[in-house]
Image 1 (spheres, rainbow over the protein chains, first blue to last red):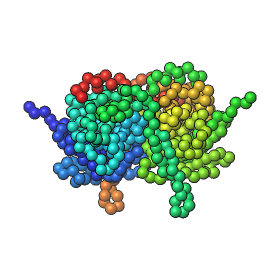
Image 2: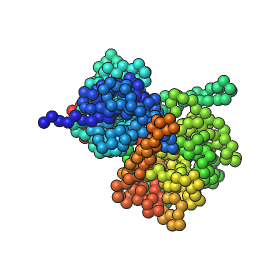
Image 3: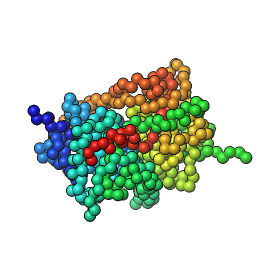
Image 4: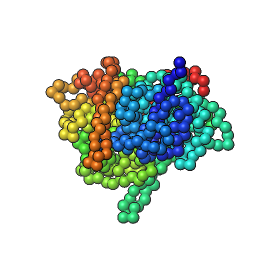
Length: 257
Length: 257
């Protein structure tokens, strides 16, 4: 008897019209039945935001021929919630994928990432989930080298499932002349963004700011996602949504509370 | 020689005019020199969102008499970044506090919490940080019982500092006839929101949704924040921003990648 085709939910944070989600949908169509629920406009930097105190729109989209797709006015996390509880209802996806993001979500960027918030929301719902990002911020980024790796990783998750309560954060080096060396399982590098605020005056004389930042990585570990990406490997970090710093519990228990 | 007064940065997600931040500012003024940088409008459910691709406003506020305060058009994480890199510049706060939030941020809600994103942003910057929330969503919530506990916990952090790379998530039971039993160091309960989408038609016949949710807790552990709050204790959870699920690394390393 033929195995049932897996059901795959696709979302992202750059919006349903972005080139990155197009590549992801194409690859997923080779692996199973695809349903897309993605934001109707870019949601970069949204972190794990949800829409509270405001309404949500969800409308069918014809952007992917022959595929059941919806565009949503909300955040990536809203998209996954609406997909699970409204669009798919009693059908449970075998896999949830988000991306492919235009730009890296490695290291500390995972916290600010709308791409990963969709994947983590799915993990909270008990679904195997992967966020994919390409380390190239350009809207014209070349995704042609990503397909084989996206497929390989997705197939492994479909085959093995994931340990409970985690989502995978996958980052792929930008296209270059050098061939990608392979895929590495990593920990999140201990790095941060060093913000710079560019202060300007608007035409009415009132000040405003642009936030810009430099990525600062002082973590020299060769088991980190940053090391892998710098050395032209794809990084895979398993991410938890239990934020408890268990090692800190005994320290705090010594306090006079 | 008299000890130098600690410098305390205060932010929140309900906005600079909310009653919760007023209580927090009052308590912090007893402990040190206070600077406030908070959103100019409510930012609930914003998670760890930051403002990318848009400008930020930051204007002085006279809302707290005699206190250096600023209102910001951005998210709670933006507020902390602007405070650190623009408002305070070379001065390093001894403590960053966020809240007091109108509503619980216990268990999985920590991920959606703007209150906690301010605290976690501060932790990323290497600053000791605490997010405070009251388990009462009402704008008219009674904060009168919170002050003594907020002060006690803040004093412990000022005295001991915090283990590196964590922020404290403090939730306080709503005011009731029963006296609060004490303060418990806890882990994040393994619970989730079960969403319900209320579908309606707008006056033009187009559908829209309200997201509503029920909190579902199947974690019966007596070491969780939910257990503490249900039993009228204040919960304190140390939260990490390294999301790596270290226990999953060996599992994934067995895959055929």
